[in-house]
Length: 450
Image: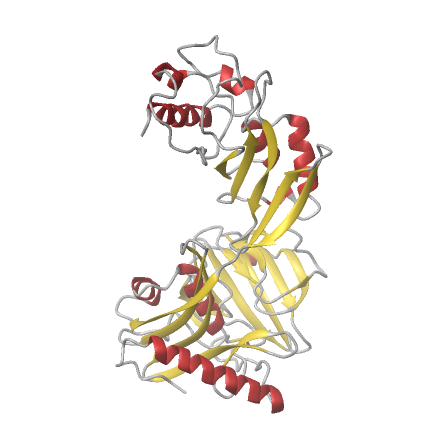
């Protein structure tokens, strides 16, 4: 690496610590030779568009004019990536990178036509671009930036001929492939599936898809099997940028297979269906929380606080304080407030027959109030230990006709059943998925379900 390039990188690393919380690396700088400039240039100030930031650097030659460092071979424009950190604002990142406050405001305003800058989140990538200043000019020209909204969508904000800014959206060209993972459960589903190569996000989606029918606290045993077919997306360089959804899963529990297939219906629904075309989705979730331990079942028990035997009319799920709690089904909130021994409590009416109740919450999710419509799987609150409670957990009840019933014995109302032409379309989807699965099969000892 040349002395010049080493110097540029060193200065950029120093600049990253001056008014910037994001990672900063200079890109698009071509190789140079040591004969192109004296070695002392490595310690000259490089403004990156911001004289104040450059002036704060401790350099060997502080009298070097800002923005006038001439480096042969630099392309017409250069850029460097920023990674959003907790607490960052887009305008603050741009100003920290050397953009004037007025131009940062103009660029963020232009972005607002396609994306709300307040929605940036830690981990998102932003690339800021400049054109090197001509001789006699003080600052490099800010050309704009690109923001990766998600793995597929990118928004570019560019300077216009009138020195304003315009935002445009582009969809990244990605290639899709399928991956298969299968294995035996020895410790637990999460650890064994992760060891088999299943990404955590895919595994969470699988658990949720089965959560209407499978009691993950009691139904999973050592020796049970799993098989999952899921998507992977790569960019133009071949780098993996996203693990997509799963298209097929099969849990073999106590020797009984439970296969489900992803299907896009003609009317726009995407859901998972069993081989008969019955939706895996039911009216109510059996477990409205992820990663929790079933700590107390429905039935008589010795109350841990009162000390005498008392009917426990729900399920308790022990989980860390702050764990999200999901609505068990679509419905309307009937009660949201403090309710005696339940502590912070929400009750949702789903239809004329069924309601669900959630107790001991630490707090409610934003906007949760009486009369609020919620969707199944929507976060309604967070695990706590309010009310009569010995530790953080969710108390979950299912009510039928206003009376608490045992959630583990309720025959959940079934979801959609495909019929006629749609069922025929599903069978075509199922045949295609089975062919894709067979092409990737490596573990021949996994006998698939229908």
